[in-house]
Amino acid sequence: MNDVLYPIFYLCAAGLYIMALKWMNSPTTARRGVFAGEIGMVLAVVGTMLRYEVIEYHWIILAMVIGAAIGAPLALMMPMTAVPQRTAIAQAFGALAAALIGTAEFFEHPPHGFVLVALTIEMLLGYLTFTASLIAFAKLQELMPGRPLVYKGQNFVNLLVFSTAIGLGSTFYFSPGFPWAFPAFAVTAMVFGALLIIPIGGADMPTVIALLNSYAGLSASAMGFALNNKLLIVAGALDGSSGFILAIIMCRAMNRSFTNVLFGGFGAIVSSGVGKAEQRPVRSASPEEVASILDTARSVIVVPGYGLAVAQAQHKLRELYDILTRRGIDVRFAIHPVAGRMPGHMNVLLAEADIPYDKMVEMDEINSEFAMCDVALVIGANDVVNPAAKNDPTSPIAGMPILEVDRARTVMIIKRGMAAGFAGIDNELYYMDKTLMLFGDAKSFTASIVKELGVTA
Image (cartoon, rainbow, N blue to C red; front, side, top):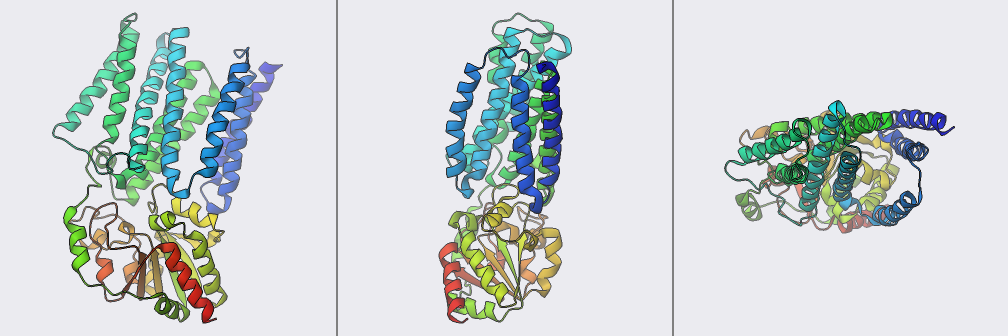
């Protein structure tokens, strides 16, 4: 009976995974996509437990209880600003689990031929993704420097370590039986994973997370071949391909290539830019002045950034949106693909405050609207609105597509100070005659604007 049921569970789970990816392409159907993925995972777990290989359940149930006890608080208590770190650490544990399952299969049921090749690839990807994700987590959590750590001959060292891992893995096929080969293979793969991420700066972390997600998916797919599990093959292939495509999209959004992301030094801090920024004159405004300008505007485009997430200002921003729309002012939100620290960060943040999905407009659609906009209100964004990307061919962000807020009639920027963004460079937008700097915490300053608009209602 179980042999009939579990393929049905697997088939339904695979269908739900495909629909989940389709629905998550749009903010309006993203919740449905998440639920579909969750249901698909439940069906996959139940189907796996019905397989004939599973003869005892007590260790499985114990592991599920422990995992749920750790994972549920992490999910419920995790602030939005820490979601990228949580994603990285979750990928690390998932990759390690895949690698350990492959290791157990390697020793318990020594494979041969194609199965051995698939299992070796699975373990290589699993172990390197584990340490690579840990380094990404440490950089995002600022447990280690976020700038690229580079040294002479780094690419050669990386290639040598990777080649060594491949060579050790080849011994499983051509010369099995060496007791030292497997631990050396596992350690070398983990060292390569760490070396892969160390030279990558914080500005490229969104792309790195997407790419590591692709590696984890490919590892799961290879495990499916090794274990003759069709659902793992399908789910892993979906995860791997979607992560790879997302990484390509992110690279295009940042005008970076895979070579630059994996081996370049983009994201390093330019020490001279911040010091000069503090000495140049800028125009500032009070909440009262900002409220007066907004009250006379006909159209406002809000540009959210990581500073908005740090200040947790999304709910106050929703109050500002409500007040302005009640006065007949057209308010929209411009979303840059790499705003924040992971893909979709700003969409999720605004959705948390129940801001309508149709008011969130992607960069390619909104850029032509800035020239007809009365006010562009930038909250906590920096590099994604820096005109240097299109005006300065020598800039580290040259060629990166940006939100063209400098074309708006009036630009207002809520920011704590004049510090540089991830790229570590000065932002000429701050010094334009049309720009007003609104210094302060994003949440408190937005609340002050809401209060002043309430007074003038």
